[in-house]
Amino acid sequence: MKALCWHGRNDIRYDTVPDPTIQDPRDAIIKMSCCAICGSDLHLFDGFMPGMEKGDVMGHEFMGEVVEVGSGNHKLRVGDRVVVPFTICCGECEQCRRGNFSVCERSNRNKALADKVFGHTTAGLFGYTHLTGGYAGGQAEYVRVPFADVAPVKVPDSLTDEQVLFLGDIFPTGWQAAVQCDIERSDTVAVWGAGPVGQFAARSAVLLGAKQVVVIDHLPDRLSMAKACGALTINFDTESVVERLNELTGGKGPEKCIDAVGMESHVGATFDTFYDRAKQAVMAESDRPHVLREMIYVCRPAGVLSIPGVYGGLVDKIPFGALMNKGLTVRTGQTHVNRWTDDLLRRIEQGQIDPSFVITHTESLANGPQMYETFRDKQDGCIKVVLKP
Amino acid sequence: MTNPELTGQPSAFDRKAHALLRATQSPSRTHRSASRKLARGLGWLGIGIGLVELLAARRLGRLVGPRGREALLQACGVREIVSGMGILASQRPATTSGWMWSRVAGDALDLAILGAAAAAPSRGGHPLAAMVAVAKVAAVDVGCARALRAQAHAARQTIDYGDRSGFGQAVESMREPAAVPTLSQPFEQPASRTAADPAP
Image (cartoon, each protein chain N blue to C red):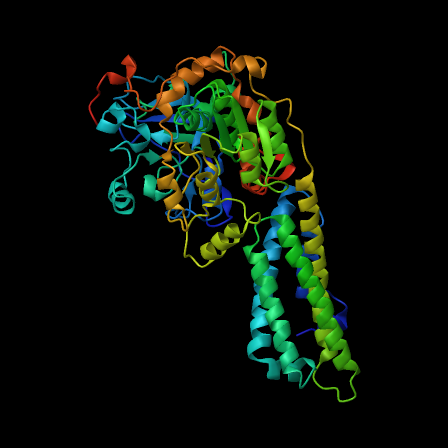
């Protein structure tokens, strides 16, 4: 079969790889009908996440048709149309029973490695380093789904692939980012990053009743999409984020702050971004945490910082004194996708929201390597790329 | 071995330079990738040449012409290394293009230094041959810088997504103050998920 494979920094190739097979009775094989490039795939593409090996199949946002089912899988049948969450979960461990699916204790087959790096393992993820299991990803014609009797979400034929694909990652990720802010009707929610997760976080904050949503970026096309959902926008190239947020909140700062940027914040706007980039270049720091610093500084005391943006390792110069003295609450983590999918699928079916609004580019899987560059460089107004076999 | 300059056939360097230039002259996606790769290659080339200029300035001066100008050659070496590092560190076409234009400016300076060496009465080394080589590299630098600038320009073209709210109704009617699940609430497993199958 054909798949997009990682071969090193800035090197994704459309390769021929062996077809996946059933390896466990609970497995299923999915024939991919639609997949997407996620912003967090760019961290692998840019070489900032350790633990990739040459030939690894990329991708963790995908859906398709079940073409083979293991003998122990009583949930799926051949022909089912499913969206597959990016977190692999067993459904039976203590964390899964609590709904903390992204920290499943059993699905990471490289648990010993993750235990050493993180202290305790997190869930296995599709196409996202050997630290999270080294599972082949979904930017491929066929995908093996482990524990396929737990996470895959059956979707009705009345909805198109484009409407439901993002149930597997970015929609629940934006939703969880907003939910864990405990939004009240009087709240201002500031969202850093108007990429796909930022767009869904802003819309989720609106749906959850925030008084005011402010989205921060510097790309006009992305800001225009944020404005479409009623958000106010700040272009950090032309105005001070801190001053503008204080202006919009009577000098008190936003109650809730969402970091939808993560480890690769834009270099150039402020001095600390150059500092981080220089340290990154000499491997003295793995991530660029400019957004974290800015959120801690501008957030209203007793506010909440919600961090769906991906961080991979070590960050430097975090103003922890401000964080502690202001009494800020920090909530973060990979998304517990299945905790939210039933509710979000209902909202899509009811017409509250159509997640396909975020798609700007649809291409064939074969053009994937070029689309990684287009997405990374934010060319042609690219916000979200969908790939089809 | 046949000398390409005598037979009129393009040398291997020329063929490669023309192929690289062609690759940078189209804005198609394949060529976007080609021009970025080419820029990285030129960045490494610049670092290599810069190190030679920095560490072997006297011998290089004897070879290409400007004798007794070691400090000038070493300064050029530092410039080459800085440009090369800038190219390798930059992530966007606009930034890479800027560093590539700095290479072009450096090429012009090199040509001026070599021209002065060729015109000097105490001429030594092979400044004309060096000028031809620098001119060829400069042509590739210009092609690459222009291609990257075109990409940066294309990237700057703004598309208005102001009609993409994603909501089924007007924004104001979408605000839902009703209670929604939170992370602190106990999670209730759907019945379909509690049927405990044996662990694999």
